[in-house]
Amino acid sequence: MTALGFLHPGHSAEDDYQRIEQLLGTDIRLDLEKGSADRLTAGVEALRLSGAEAVVWASTSSSFGYGWQGAHDQVRTLALAAGLPASSTSFAFVHAVRELGVRKVAIGATYPADVAERFAEFLRAAGIEVTGVHAAGVATRAEVGEWGPQDVTSLAEKASATTAEALLLPDTALHTASHITTLEKHLTKPVLTANQVSVWEALRLTTRKVNAPSLGTLFTRESVVQATSSPSGV
Image (cartoon, rainbow, N blue to C red; front, side, top):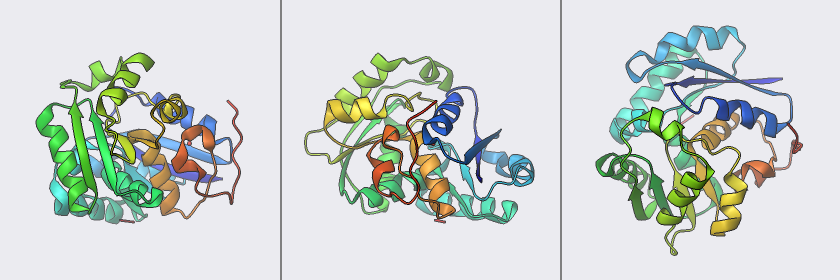
């Protein structure tokens, strides 16, 4: 059993992790504790007691919002508090893009435009070219959490620039776990979503390799452990 720990801001899309755990279909457990950016260490003890081998701060905007260096400092604080390998969703996107071997990405964000642009700046600091940013301008996580498959598809279509080699959907409040392969077929390119890359990042930190095609191209890079299709350091 590989246990992975996630500190999550809560309020929406927590059930994506349950779905990802089902889609992984192996001996991998995903444990969530709710937290906030200014109290990252509050849920660490519970995750450590659960047997977590790595911990990820599963909030994109509350990591890239601190800038490149600030996000590094945030992860270091989390790692020290947990005594475990640690990362955040923002760095998960960077590592996932590198894993795919792509250089040009488009962003489809539910955020207001200024917040979406800060994510683009974060990616550029990592040497990733951003070909376009589409911001839906939604102000609250609760509203994003109510979006259905058609809303997600519409966001992806509006954001997917023809020159981009991959599309990034950065909001952890967005339900995407059940729609990734459909989006990839529709857009004919890899799609990276916040909760998907957060789980992949935790696996990376534990050096656990999983092949789970139902979670998109990112989860087809390795075949050391084969997942079934039944009911998921800086």
